[in-house]
Length: 194
Image 1 (cartoon, rainbow, N blue to C red):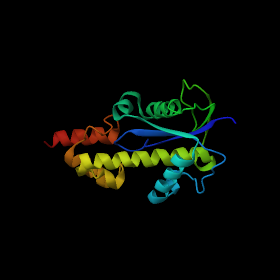
Image 2 (image 1 turned 180 degrees about the vertical axis):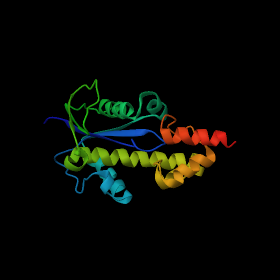
Image 3 (image 1 turned 30 degrees about the vertical axis):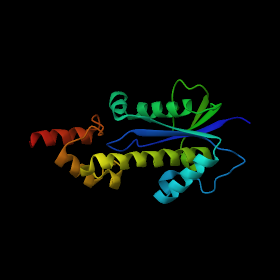
């Protein structure tokens, strides 16, 4: 059997927190019912499916690129880095990777193909999408405990009106992506108003 991994990331759009990628090699002998694009599922359903993915897959791995790496590389390259790290963490290694999106990370140890909309079309990518989203949401809940003034538990770092308002009132934290324009603007406004 050829080991084919689905790969996806979560967290390209938020203003805070890491970008998280997952790689999953499903077990054809243990199908998982209900796999779909993580964005189409409720949080409760994602969590239940993430548990099934961890238990039933042949192998899975999750990796991140930090806020510092996002600011240094840009979000696209940081996402590619997280995907490559997730694939490299698989043991056994994948022989082929199906990557959600229109490009593949460079320097992979296996062949790869990009599939636009893959998180809705390929079960292994759906599984990776779910795992990445669940792990990233858990990290944002942890950051909420550390920085409750930003209400990360509510919006997971996405640029909602409440998050932008908190950014202007408190200024950016160390877990904010300093290279993102709304964060730069909020920092400037915060410093100007001091």
